[in-house]
View 1 (spheres, one colour):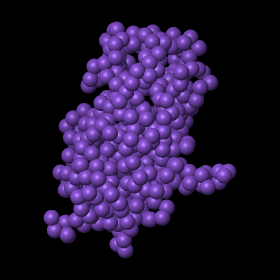
View 2 (cartoon, helix red, strand yellow):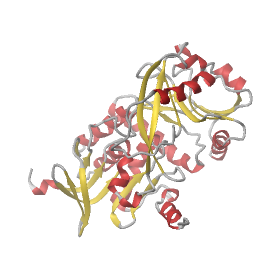
View 3 (cartoon, one colour):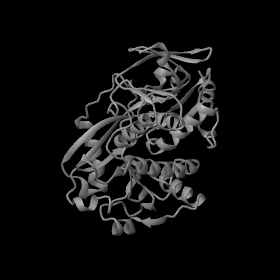
View 4 (cartoon, one colour):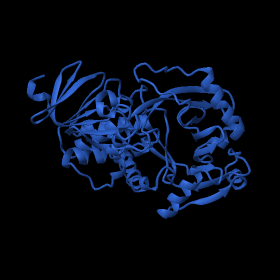
Length: 387
């Protein structure tokens, strides 16, 4: 490979959900782009796997996400049409909990603010409509018909395949060792060689802080565990009869999805055991303690879904203090753009985050309102904290 062939317009560091979408958008705009991934493409070492991932329009976390979601849905549909494979499945979504819980109230507020179609249901009305749900009498739920799930591994494959068709070069099993600014852009060193580009986009997931020191103590990896259980009545957990859910309970915040792709009703607990980890040394083996926690939830709220365990998997959240994303330029290097800290709810946004990263790399700005995702809100909070 000649030296000139190691020069690119843009380099994307990390080819998971966000990185693959960024590659796609940059490549389809005619740029010479390189994607670097230390693991396989796709892989199960980070945060962009698990067969199915929730997508929902009602957004209890913050109503400011809804405009991005509208664009995200449109882009997922464009992608699946271009690739000729269904990637987005609509089941409806449930946001449930006690009437005063942020999950219920936030979802309801986002629907009202953005005029989203929705219904407010009592627990009795919910179980009559979707019998797998057996929630406490005092719980309330928001049903929003546009919720559903996206296929993460297939989405990554689709974005990468189409990016390659538009001329992108993608390297798997190649670890980035370092990068540095240059007079004309950036230079990236890997365990295979060196590459240069005008700009670098860091989409490294749980490894983001290892690739950008400005994220130390800001984008913090956390061990997360998922489980698939055999329902006693599988028909109640089909995509046609079981909306995806987020739920606030005495046991914590949980989320779940219907049977699809592999056997079993899939669910997990937000922030599982609150275990901050190093992504290079994380315990990737689910254990009995993990299973006991998850089973207790299913037995209480989804008793017909709490049959034998079929599968378990470990992944990672990369959390920020306020659990909102980071979409911004590196504070010390304007040639570097960062997408990080997706805090367990980012995958549904991959399609639009890829577009935003491409905008920032190409033009330094984007038409989307990303003010709430500025890195400075978090660095200022750390600098102002008492010592």
